[in-house]
Length: 86
Image 1 (cartoon, rainbow, N blue to C red):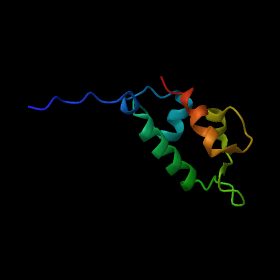
Image 2 (tube, rainbow, N blue to C red):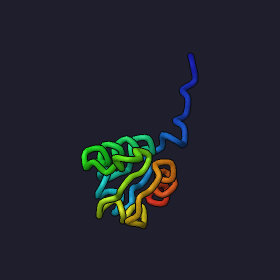
Image 3 (spheres, one colour):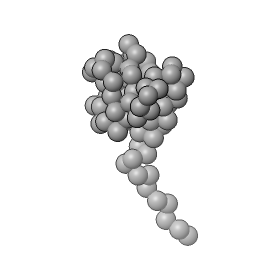
Image 4 (cartoon, rainbow, N blue to C red):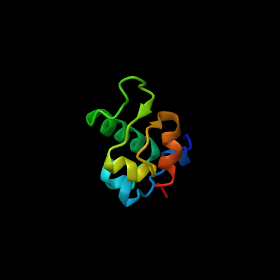
């Protein structure tokens, strides 16, 4: 009989902060699910910069998560999100 593989830390459900929960919904949820829901929110609200699609222009809710109202590069986004996951 094969051993059951333990779930990776990456897939472990994490607590979501109140600010992030406004955007992605209440947790706990794995990091991958948070990212998926975050992108759904960004696309639904049309927050990607039309000239440079790598940049996200945060609305009121996202600016609380990012800690800034300035445009954010999508590659820095995950670093900023991790502060809201425990």
